[in-house]
Amino acid sequence: MSDIRITNCHIHTLTAAHAPLYYPAPPVAAIRAWPGLLHGLRHAARLQPWEGPHEAVLQLDHFRKTGCRESQRAVFLEALRHYPASARFVVLPMDLEYCGHGPVPVGLKAQHRELYELSRDPGLGHRVIPFATLHPDRPDAVAELRRCLDEYGFRGVKIYPRLGYAPSHEILMREVYPLCVERGLPVVSHCSRGGVRHRRWTPARADAVTDPAAHVPVLRAFPELRLCLAHFGGDADWLSFLAEGLDPLDPEARRRNWVTKIADMIESGAYPNLYTDISYTVFKVPACMPLLTLFMESERLAARILFGSDFYMLRQEDLSEKAVSIRLRAALGEARFRQIAETNPETWLGER
Picture (spheres, rainbow, N blue to C red):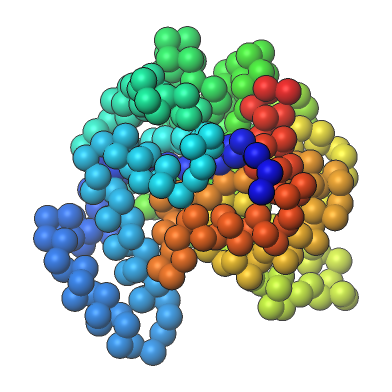
């Protein structure tokens, strides 16, 4: 097996202390207080005939098991178990204080500070590539971002529009993206129909600001910005494409499916610094790997796909992250895996 320095471009190390008290629903507060409740819920959900409730409870339990770790360092150590000693990780914090799901025990500044300390850890820091995050409605959002870049040396920015803002938000367009272009910093934006959304927003409203098309104003205004649309459109759109295909009589079908929309945007050549990562999607649904292999037959598209897992937002019940990564490496072959796990990440991070 060839020596590949893997860069996982999408993991999280936040703990339960960084999550709103009532996310994703008020009963979660009770589960935090009495974790044993989840065992009963898992059993009850397993007995009913629908897959959705059981999967939701299972994911909540997995989230709890990792999120209950006492520190970001402890979560990071769990991720390291699945990767070679040379692997690096882009660590993405989350600003969940303004999404309407209740108070957050540990605020963003403290979350950023702890991530900085992890990046300076004598034994682990060389494997951490820390990004900052912001919610543009936070009064001191830009000041906190600048502090992370200037004092902590953070390497990029994460945004999450479903939390209640558009990627073309005035603060982002006026202050954040120009700063990233000036300093050569990459940006990653959540781009799938799933995930956290503002409590007062409908799924349709959240999808509207997460849609790949919602990022077009950003890409046109800042063509030099290295922007990654995370999750390559999301597992729902991948599964829809595989199971249902596209209506050949509907000219809008490709634009409605976020997988083909992102692929077409990259293939068009109109957005030369647009990237996407495979986090969550391919790790949740390994059956997507053959489709990823087909996508990578296009040299232009293959050069813009990044390896990422979304640890620990997704934890497999039957397969570990290590097992899925090995399957992916075998499916793509060494050359293609090196491209998405080493070459492309280094280019996106500005190291090449």
